[in-house]
Image 1 (spheres, one colour):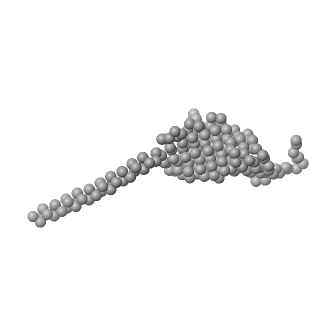
Image 2: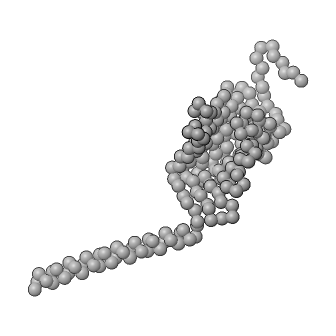
Length: 192
């Protein structure tokens, strides 16, 4: 009889334990379901994305976090905590790099906007700094409408401008309202 009571007590404790565990799990499921209903976003952390064409790597994106919003009129990807994009030539040599504190890519507009502490570093060492950089994927064109500064690899040559436009390779850069300092070697003088 004592043994039967002991078994019943153990059985009751086990049932209560599992019932309590299920209650917590159901509460957690409800909580997660309500978050998904409130904010339709996919969040990825520690992101590395490789873009390639015919098995040749064209670019690599590295970001601590990427958010994908698809349940909207204008689906977009957001990189709220910085982004680094490395661009490569067909031989796999890095040709340029873009970093920024924030970026967003709009799917339908095919437009990427980089904001806050945007730095473009080319393979030749030229560094361009600005607070905004927009890439129009349809036109293969970079541009902005805020001040820009550029520095040569050795830091001796600088330029500043009110805005700029450039091809996708950032080789043909047109800076508006340009000022700057250029160091000329030897007897070279600027020509008109």
